[in-house]
Amino acid sequence: MKAIYDVIKSPCLTEKGNILQETQNKVIFEVDPRANKIEIKKAVESLFNVTVSKVTTTNILGKQKRVGAKSTGRTSDWKKAYITLAEGKINFLDEL
Image (cartoon, rainbow, N blue to C red; front, side):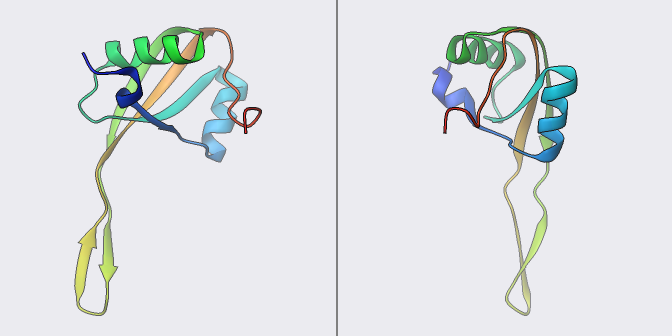
């Protein structure tokens, strides 16, 4: 099992994420691509002292980007986790 700080990389603070948090009590995190749903659930519950009811994950493919005039590069692939909270709330902006 991985350390809990290796599983969760960062929260996704986007407009869509804020709307989901207010309406459906969901939080979005960028997670390690090798982490499974059980590890993600345990990491969120132990880090933020909340109860997780459901975890949904999706793999995001990197986009092609231009680098200079002739060559193209690619951004990294990453994994996103949508976490539905049963009890508790996570406020990222209050802690800053």
